Amino acid sequence: MAPTIYDRPEHDDLRATVARFLAEEVEPHGEAWEEQGYVPRGVIRKLGALGLLGITYPPEYGGAGADNVTSIAFQEALARSTFGGFVVTVLVHTDMASPHLVRAGSKAQLETYLRRVIAGELVTAVAVTEPDAGSDVAAIRTRARRDGDSWVLNGTKMFITNGVHGDLYFVAARTASDAKGSRGISMFLVEKGTPGFRVGRALKKQGWLSSDTAELVFEDCRIPAANLLGEENQGFYAIMRNFQTERIAVGAVAVGHCRTALKLALDWTMNRKAFGATLFDKQAIRQRLAMLDAKVEAARQLLYHCAWLADQGRDAVREVSGLKALSGELANEVMYTCQQFHGGMGYMRESPIERLVRDARVLSIGGGATEVMLEEVAKRFEV
Image (cartoon, rainbow, N blue to C red; front, side):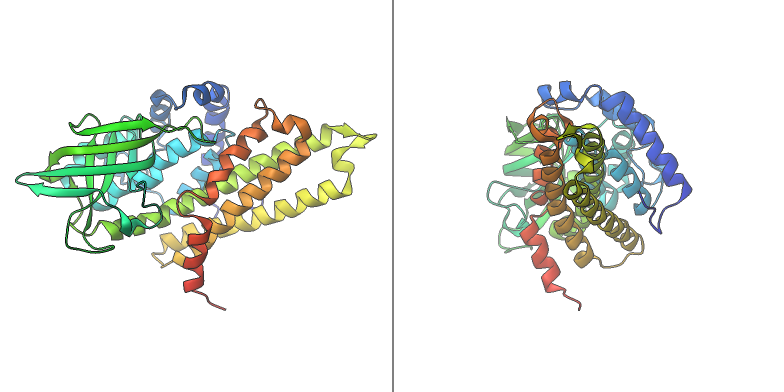
């Protein structure tokens, strides 16, 4: 692994801590989590106890107050796990859902929830996607109607990670019935167990099997007016802002998984013999692995650069969209090639590379499909 210009000594310590956690708490147990369909919440609390669930969050609430580059070092290290479902369970909590609370929460909301979020006592989910609205956030139909001191939510959300076993949900709903498109969308806090809010069904997926994913249903779900998160009718802009954080995190997952897959393939090809020599002795195989390593290294440098741009407060939609498109497609190329070099064993469920292949497929879909990301880049071409 070549260092980036953004690396600092404390990042190596952080990576070592995460590697120990994966070796002791995740890899020996992940198969059982794949079968049961979710990560035990006690594991999340252990990460909280290590101070790993609030890396960029304010110290007064138990966070570390670190920068985005440090957060990426954590995300990439976590993604060295061979269980993508575990990784996304954590990163949805830390980088896709709870940032809505940190960025827009009132003092009372922060005092009520943030310490428990950082400790892993409350697992969070973000509910934006609907059956007919994915990357096109402006098309959401879930509505929230003001009724005295309450808001009443009605609608359905789809593909919600941490949706089955989550505790605190950040829900996007349309609050201005006469507004069109991106106008008139707001964000709300909804706690598990709120009357009128239920899990419609747990969803079965191709990959990320240890991550619980749900359809959520809101039927006259009444929440206090104080559960409005941020300004009324400004939710679309909060979602767009958080998409940048989310897409960088997906890039980190892709890069981490690619590095793990290449390590697995390298170990396999150096030991597996065919036709009187190891697979690595075959020029075509080692050169293909070398090219993939170069591509992953390039994507990794872009990943850290995007995190640095975020730390500088720079508009990085072009760079982040490019990272998301590049890394999602690259992850699938790397996984399929590494699986190919594993031969028949790579097709067996007992092989980590088989699981990584299934888990990688969504990386070019979730968080903004490749085609959507490339359009964002194309709008901002600089040649």
